[in-house]
Length: 330
Image (cartoon, rainbow, N blue to C red; front, top):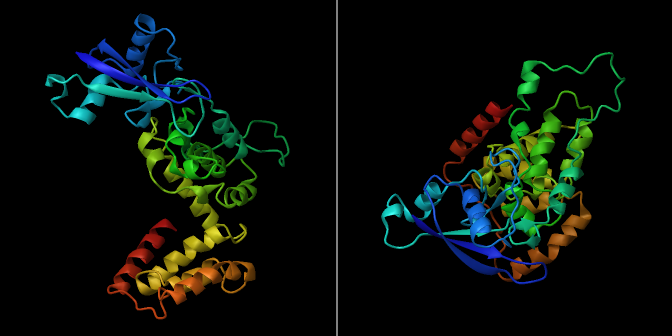
């Protein structure tokens, strides 16, 4: 069947341009097969990365029809069904597939991006086991099967960059290390051979650079080709931070704790108490209180500041549900 490939092409310091290529392809052909065909038969200047062709190396990550994916994994048939439905192959209209470079990284040429920030942010979480404080043993450090099983899922990450490409948190916050780095970080926290868990949790808890920079948009889970589920791994780190009494109190921790407690009390959030407890740290953070004073004053003037709070209907049921979930996760 005939398929039109719209490839977003770009050189450094220039605007992207769309170039179309029409190919005769099979439904089982991968996107990478088609890009190879374009390069070998139509346009040798087209630039893209590739290597193993077996969903192992992660080199061929790019955006296919608006989402990050591995070109060697996605095939024509499944892509067209997502766009045109089950009758895609019988349509009289020539179907189209759009190929673009990954997001959140500058383009070097065409589908090749500069992944320097990706690797730098990975390095920032120290993604390696630290045993510096231990005496070197006579034999290697051993783990039980149960301890090793905790690392299986994060060990599947192939560093393709798909999650980083489609991360909304990274798009709005350049300091956020990204889901790939935090997925690796969760492995370090869970690894029984590491001796720096408290220091790691303190580092991952800082501002919006670490776990609190995640917007929980679920994009990383949706596009991960290896089912690492980075958002779930970020949540695991958050749970460790909240459960660890040695991790210093922070606005992010209070945000999580206060939100849950206020909903338990009233079924929804008492905005007056929320600001004072989270930003003002229960009247202990004078600087924080002063920072929200102008906003509170403007709300009062415009009649938008709630002077009273009424609990919602079904508060007891909401409280019971939250407490049940908390009991299950302890």
